[in-house]
Length: 153
Image 1 (cartoon, helix red, strand yellow):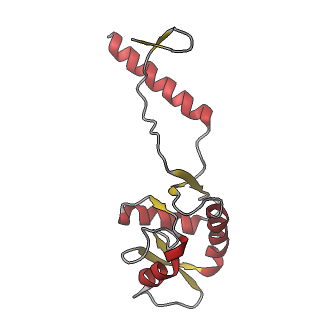
Image 2: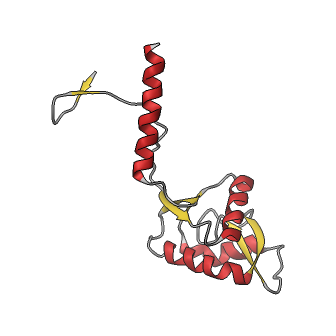
Image 3: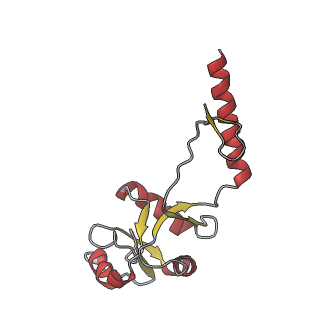
């Protein structure tokens, strides 16, 4: 058993499903923008991609490649995943039409969120609100308790 270097007390390792990542989490608000949230959920399944790396320089070229073969449609926006603002975007992106009036606010939200980060930032897009730390800790405590009970039997 290891000891805590600061206190000298025994230190145990608990099994959790928590993962440390270099990606910045972006929690897309599904209740406010349900049509765009549904698009992202479908796109994640179809592309098997949930993260991307910001790269604004090549955005216009990637957008053109992604939208090739998906003509403009009056009253609709063509949305894509991975987004053209990400280096993973472009040819092969999942593209779908979303009603322009419903997509406008969602697009503004995304742009406001992404302007916080410089190019090269790796982002992980998650749908819904971020989990509260108390809830995460409670889940971990329950899992650890169940694991300890199994070991004791």
